[in-house]
Image (cartoon, rainbow, N blue to C red; front, side, top):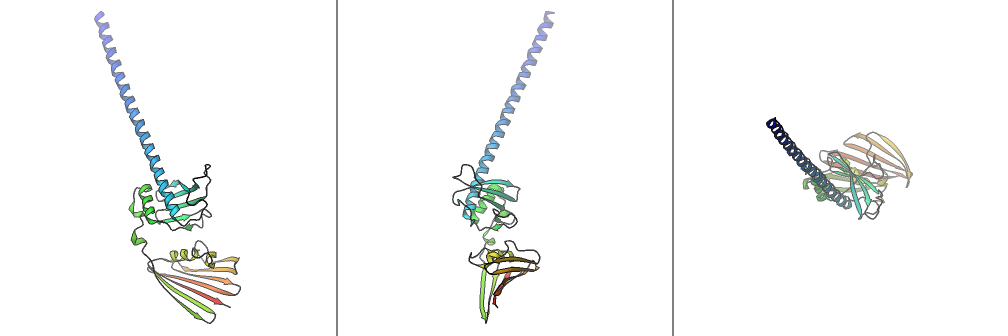
Length: 260
């Protein structure tokens, strides 16, 4: 009887030790897993902070017009793998008042100011090197989104202006570009130019828009196709017509100023 009791006691002790070892092993695994998750979380936080700082430098390099420019913080609100949404707020405002919104469109290599309108964003210019740094940080260095030198080579521009009685005609040929880029440059040029009254986004169908500002009564948009557009600005004392035609990699722009 005594031998049986001793044997049972030894079995119990052995089982208890194994159970204790298993518990210790599980605790060690859980602790290592928790530490790994904390490390990953910390790394992600550091990475997001780094990307936000680069995004802030990119936005500051652009021609965006917002309060506190030069003192901006950028928070990345969304990143779906091809586009990001930036919220802008000033460093000196502890409440984090939003002063602007920007879309980072990696696929189309565009930085868009949507502060005033999501439907009619303003295309921004920016530092291409900073753009590539943001791609490296936030898009796993996907070089298909890089802006290379070949993407930004200067357009070749050739313009001729002629005068006929009550009419002035300016004809320009732009190489290595497209119709949309020339239109965007036209509307974002000199603030004193009446072209600032044109639609921020070129209509996709024929359209007439009432303006009644700075002598302009209305503007007619005639869309022949995606490669040819005619815009007529009707004044009380004359007409200005803009004809844009894209052929291959070249855009012809003809602006005619006519007085009644």
